[in-house]
Image 1: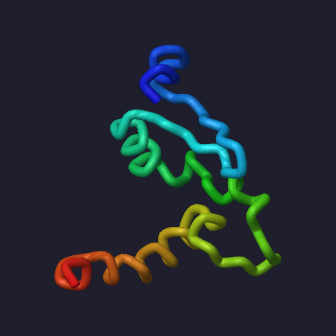
Image 2: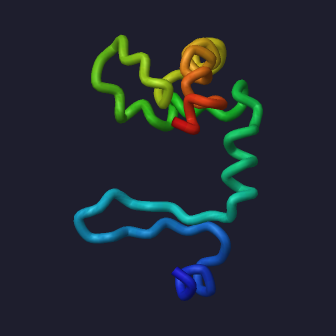
Image 3: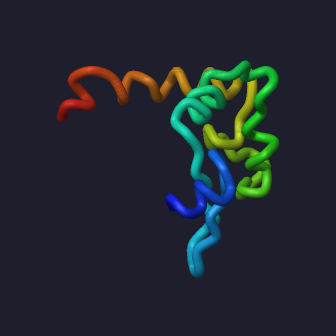
Length: 85
């Protein structure tokens, strides 16, 4: 990984035999993506190939208000005492 970082810089894709491609980037870049404007960054469009059916409501396939609605339904499970258990 260190040699790849030296050769390709902060962000690069790593292709490993029998594995899906992986990506490496600094944590601050990941934070920028996950805190970006949801009306600009549409993950659903990029993940459209993963859709298994026309009504797939996976959080990874939704954008805008529908994404936020589904995300808010999941958030309580990832807070406080529940995470400690």
